[in-house]
Image (tube, rainbow, N blue to C red; front, side, top):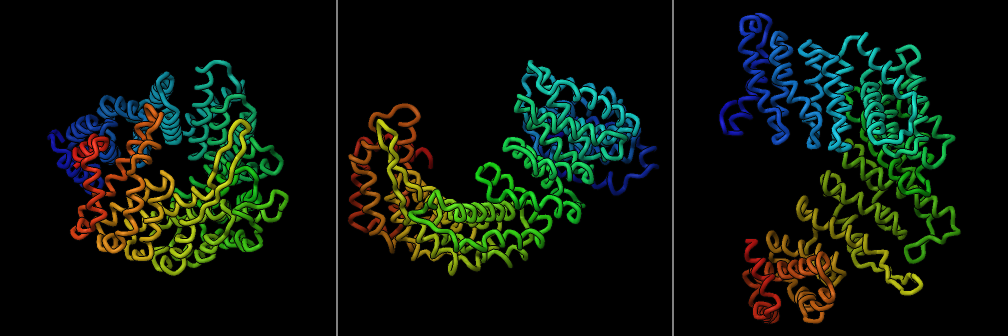
Length: 594
């Protein structure tokens, strides 16, 4: 552990963890207490946020050591605790390092290596630093919650009582310091409630529920959000009381409180998803009806939350959720669309379209969170039909679902890509829905199909990386050539795809070379360059130059192919570019990238 080699330290920590966990006994600990203390001292030096992997391994060894040899507690208190306090406020702390930190805090308290009251005071002092980010404050709250959960029953009760008494005061403080304290206390109450059952404590669950719901009326957004988070976390420990209360409150709330309550449900469901023993039989029948109720809500933010919740539930209980998502898209053929849009007076079509959007977005989240492949495969074909839905919102949601599948679970789509997905993508890649918006003094052209074309190109690029065998490259080449003539955002994506195909499938570029050259020529004409850079300065000029450089990368990637440079038109274009003085700085920059 004292060596400079990071790899050596990593293997040493892994070895130590196995030796101590598997072979540490009371006799060994009694005979080698001093040695264990020396180990703890060495580990403390590795508990830094500059190397989270080594920190995580070190914390795991610390936990194993304290379990085997509680006598090394004084060494842990002297050397490890200061590092733990420092890590608790680090904005770099993420899973799994955060999980290891929480387990270490629990073990420090459980093995009496640290005085509980002093530890809580130190953590609270860390949270008062003005420089702390919201993420860091949330981490401190999790640390305090873990410490409370591991403490003795009387100490837990005292902390919970103090939290309740403090939070039952003003929920709209005027100064930032008091606001920070209220936020911290709300977060701590939630993280404690995730691990403890408030309903088992006399009168606590009703008081804490009143505090959370009352905080929703605060004028401080950070207090509202902290209360929403805490309510969802506390429902994990007290599902029989707090979960029905969330659902009941959803039935008679306004739009703003609805968002907060749905955020609480989201926190509850996502904590369930991470749990080793999710209470699906209890939770799903309770939370599913209100979620389905808001699948057609006119507020996109509400539907987004609902979709995240349904997606997470599909991971926990796919057999209950996926059929309900299929029901949401069953009526998609009834949507009446003209030029990608629904008539504003057609309430039925709007409702069905919003339900379809939510279902597709839910599937996107379910795939990203790794719902069981067997269940997803059985129902996925129903959602593929949404690719042919002309309403642009639904179709774009379906594209994002496909992208999620290609990126996170390519085996879900590889077998149906050529037959069911690619033909629809080719069609969407060519759609343009331009309309003119009148802003009074001037008019502006809007292409409603642009997000769909961008999503389509992202899918093509990811397919080439993840499942290239599923691509029909000869049929894709005309689509790629057309994308090179599209607006700048699509062109940039097309340039990257051209480069990738040149590297991995050059024969297809060579065979379709004549269709690429006109677009590249047009992009590098004086008129096109002037149009991109004229009257632009600073960031805008830099972006324009990067766009031109992107096109040059694609051009020279093609020119490097063995037989491509024999094409007279391509050779002429490359020579003109090399001789043109305005391209010299860009060519020099590209040369330096090699």
